[in-house]
Image (tube, rainbow, N blue to C red):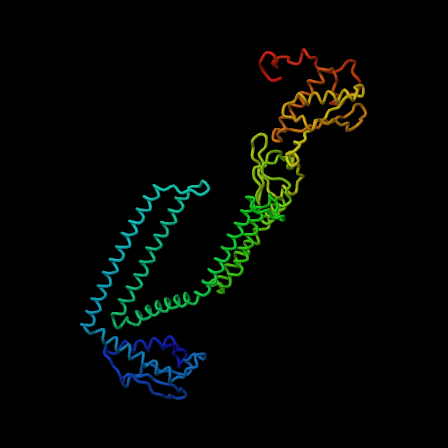
Length: 496
């Protein structure tokens, strides 16, 4: 009972202290009908009194009531009478020796059962942990080459500890409830603990029953989506194997199209199933959803940019795995094309990872795209003076190309005059390579053969620039081609 009114010099706290003292001063017996309530008026104070026989226990005024409760002073007084009778009855029964012995016996029995439960939990926990350690020593689980058994072992150990602690706490709660109920004076507390537990279990059961339709709906959406995704996977697999040949799918985009389609379907399924997830309308679930959405919004700007760039690369079909390309300053063989990055293996056997946004933003040269039928094009440029006939330069360059390994005979090499400069003519030799991945090595060999051929026929190469025509041609005579430490291939040593 809550007291709120001030009577004379006594505030509510002092009044409550006096009421407690009067109750404790009464002898431990069951007063029964001796506890009663009756209206009373003292001066201008009007209310109800709760009495034991003729002794006043407490006076209740209208000012003591909660205005929002809607109860009257009489109803409050009669409720107080019933509570006092229960207290006096419990206090009187508490003094009966047989009842106390019975309560103590049941309490000791419950304590023994709880102790055995704790002992069993400790032993079972130790045995399970021992088996897990033995299993961890025998098993070697790996995912993508990473040993995951230590991680799983740690999760299992924490799960076992949590389960053991939960069982111990639940057993302690039930033990305390049972012991309190055995004694009349503490029975209300035990009853309250039991009521709380029963209400909690009832709420959980009600929530489970009410959530069954939503769970069934989510499962139906999941299975239908899984069936649709399986059908789509089968369709794209048939396209990849050549059993189906739809005109609207390019060969190089099959895998990307499949992944994109499956992702869109799962996102749509999650959107449909979300309202039917049990608890999705609660404040906690909405708070978590807002938090996840905020994190995705803050962290996905660059991520989405990389994915969109990856889709541009895939569907533009600018290059693919196995193509020899130049991306900005990086030149090499493409080893991986993903939604986030592209990997290129250079001629130094270095793997360079380029974000797709960087790839899209730089100039791309694909040496392999037109090399399948006619071979990749390689170019060598040089400058020759005006005193050398251009037909001779053409013949020398074609001769150098014919001596170079790794260059195709057909289509034949092409020589172009690119510019008529102030002091020289700029020529370009275009050849077709057998293997595009050997492009740098073939160019090196071609340049070496050009030097040999022009030196052999005494034709001066005019690069770098010169200021005046020299008195004699600047060439290396044949006898000096293998000046030490260079070895003559005729002797069976060294590089030509």
